[in-house]
Image 1 (spheres, rainbow, N blue to C red):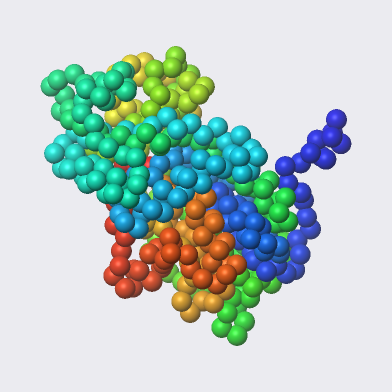
Image 2 (image 1 turned 135 degrees about the vertical axis):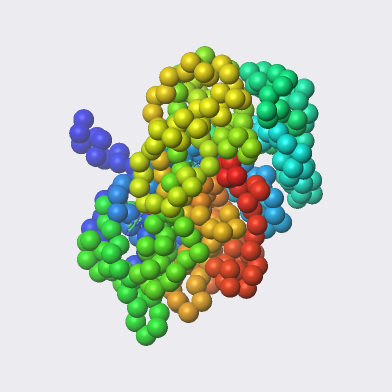
Length: 405
Ligand SMILES: Cc1cc2nc3c(=O)[nH]c(=O)nc-3n(C[C@H](O)[C@H](O)[C@H](O)COP(=O)(O)OP(=O)(O)OC[C@H]3O[C@@H](n4cnc5c(N)ncnc54)[C@H](O)[C@@H]3O)c2cc1C
């Protein structure tokens, strides 16, 4: 039995070699998707190194909401393409990812919130994303359990409805990409920490690791909440601050909710899983830290705001709560691409509290960049140099329960 299990491993074990063409630091969803698409493009000598187990960072803690209805002309096409890739991903990876496109509602409670949602509806429709404004009656029809009683301090006056939005099984995505990358010849090395990055003749030449030094033509940092630490290894200061983000689930309840619901005014989002558990999350904690401990304060605040939307949750018991790290940028948009003056170093970070949904398109684009040397148009606006050039991509209004996923 044991032998059979070993033979059927999802991915192979390898001895660490002393040279690869590409070393990817970080075996979360972004590192693994980049590795998979590199394999597809025929780049064979690729290693993914992670200091822990694969997918054990933010990718293990995500609430895995997938949607495309962002705000900017840069963000909408990018996330639209990612949603499209997610729609075909289970088939591509031959792995059930349990992607449920249940639909997503962003609630508007104030004039300014509704104005912002209207803008998003218009921009999304112009750019081919199915997202439209609906009134309270349709909200009630779609979500019968929602509290629309009059006299509440934050009444629901409208909502942005995005039918193709949904939720995916996060660990399946990670495992699917890992297995796919392995089958394409990529080496996966969990429990291998990068402790330094080496340079020779002005270009990146490799990494120092807990398993010894490795030479590499290209080093990719896909380390999300740890990106600033990795960047400091090459003397680079990123415009990133790491904040924790918390979420919790209730005990399983009888099915009552088949949409993901988010409220930027209440800083909370809610959905019910196939198992009946209700997932509740919100915006990042207001202080920067690398601690991944959850707090009673966040639990209380999220619970109060969720009950404000769904009074039926008031007696639900909390099953578990957790926190993960988010690499927040000033414009709530990611950073992808090469870094001027650091030849051989590639970044994919700034994924904040919204990055899981971007992994397919980001991984594919970063792989194309490495394989061809040309930056794909979809990621060009997200270069690090935009902070120097004053070309910020302001996704704040659409990104997170100001800051919701
Ligand atoms: C509670 C929570 C809810 C979220 N909900 C959503 C959501 O609903 N929708 C959405 O789109 N996004 C969501 N996100 C954000 C999303 O999870 C992240 O943006 C995404 O998972 C980042 O993936 P990644 O691969 O870049 O990083 P990670 O998954 O964090 O992977 C980075 C990896 O780098 C490794 N690493 C770090 N330092 C080193 C080193 N020195 N050497 C080797 N390895 C190293 C870490 O061990 C880690 O495994 C949420 C995040 C959290 C915390």
